[in-house]
Length: 356
Length: 188
Image 1 (cartoon, each protein chain N blue to C red):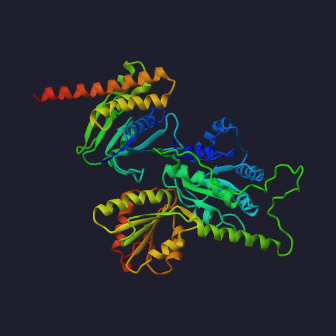
Image 2: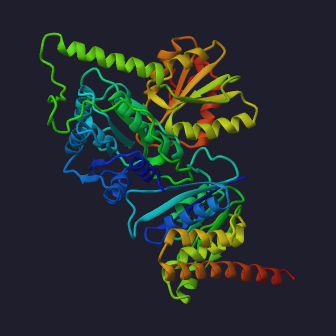
Image 3: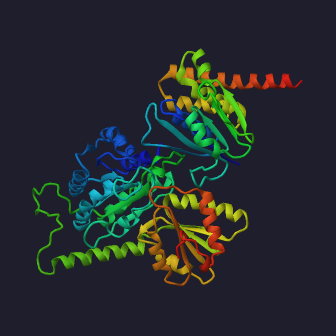
């Protein structure tokens, strides 16, 4: 199974019964798979007329209490952001998959990580947050997709799976662990016909004085709870590291190859991999910040997560960056070289692509 | 031990399929594997390539810059990937299609007239499987039986296709073994 298909099957097994999407490479295997698998599972698959239609169909399905999902790649996600903001405002649970490609604009179809800001800083209008998961292998594609549906319901909030063309297209073995439904709050807010009960309303328009501020404070409390409870990260050779690489998703995978090689050669390097991008593991990173430890953030973009790393480190350590934008995929050799450079980093010798 | 393999040729030659069988067979032998395709612009007549890694330990990056083994089915792919092949790497090529290869001297080359062999067993489209046979015989990286099982599992009900492909793999192995015994005779 390709990474994209893994997401689709995991969604079905987690009880997703509504999918709407519009084709775009490199995520086409998701709607393709859903087109036959969803009817088989007794759910609804719709190839919508546009990304806007798809996200709004998901809004409707979620309001009716169904586990709903849509997927796209970078330009398509941009189109969906209006709907995502509405979902967040109306507190509707949904899973949105972004199999990132190179940008800006139509860009290219290669894997990329240039939508980090869009995913974690909002993307659409208004003060909202998505819970954002960044899988780095197919096992995590499976596990985190299932978890995404649970967390969406738990928080009544849209959850994003932020992956990329490489992981979406690749094949590797995984254990398709069966879905176990956790204890979740009853959906006592859904619109399922108000016979014998008071009508309910789901909306994101609050015009009364102070009403919207109240709503926002409720949302902020929810995001605060996520910050406390939902942070996920994995560390490799962190403890004695002199240089700690910070990377997520595919970049972390490539960097892990480099880190392992360097370790074999006796270099004290490690890797810190955030699995949730929002909430960002800032406390954990902050605790690792020491004067004699250097950080290098490695991303397939021109430098986005590095800003959050710097905020977390807060000047306590040096934070360097290496990245390649535009859908260029770096090799372990290339990253290894950059990490090695950062071991001997001297500010006055800094190369232009190793930004301080 | 970790081996990176790049397979390249025209779309429609079964490049991606050949890679999937390698990865699948590797998984059946309890190895760590990854398969990563070129995607998007591929179609019959265009170019296609994929990267397969077979390893004894967890594979981090699925991307290979310098492969240990290169399998090519057209000139264009040879030009593109030959410079990236590791020193002492193995190049397996379809000599029915790759006519005038400008080769390096620091690598091993296995020339297999895969398309011709495939024609003689009645199906041109099995040239990829002939190369798979030569790959098995040359590298001993995978067992013949696991590729058979991988074929059966990925082709499902297409019994006839499975048989032709198995035959093509056997022909590939046989061709390589004959070549080896010939060259040994010449040495004597």
